[in-house]
Image (cartoon, rainbow, N blue to C red):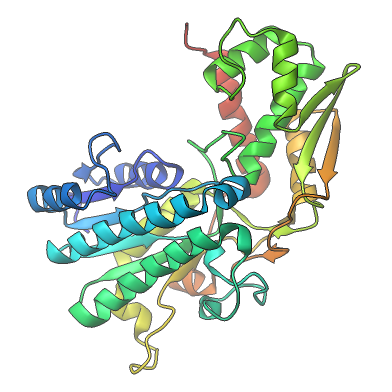
Length: 370
């Protein structure tokens, strides 16, 4: 990519897209093209067609997606399948029709089988059944990867796919109904800490800046807030706070700082082409041309919760609700393919959580007026 190449980042407001956009700007790329959802609905075939015809981007980062945690993935199964299929199909096809030089499709390691050998290599794709709760999302992402691979093989395009592990970082989703486990736990324990301190003023400010369903405005009484928080697994009784965590706490997960992920994506776009990736493959059966992005380090949900608890300074009880699904018991990526190309992560989990917590505090310290 040249510094003045026209680069379209689809999904630039999300966790992935915003990190990629920042990384590009830091590295001196000056012609970055973005559109909000209000400006361009990527599910709309005609709108996407008109956009590509008029703008003619040279490079595309496809980071736009409908995403969420276990609850959202399991509850909105049709939405996750339909919306993601539509978004990626429109962008990938129009990139081909309009001569995009290179496209990167961003997926997720949830594409791999539930009982996958560990650590997970790219070659393990489609070797077993998917984890049920996020099966529709995973199927959509697999379709996007295979679409890129197939367009490359049939039309000679240069579309590559990257599969980041669980991400967290600046601009993360803290909605307790839809967020992933790390930001959800961080926010729950922060709220728990405010309840422990009996700091209702700070809690009202926090809930104003980051609203929750059932807590409508500043007039909501403290008792109403307590009742609403119980729906999210945050319970206050006799001055003691209890935070619920779904499952047994035993599953192992890998977490990657989103800005590290972005750096890896730009690194790949700058240096690696599809033909480089498949150079050592059997030319008659090109498969698994995607690249994992991860740290190779894992932590149990229980230990993650304890690390967040220590970082936040929450003193209450952590309650593991064994009636809720654990999901995949272990999921750590083998990122040796990417490491061999010359890239590895730099931000460890403890440092990343501390940064996330400072972000919450900074919002708390600089509230927007009513």
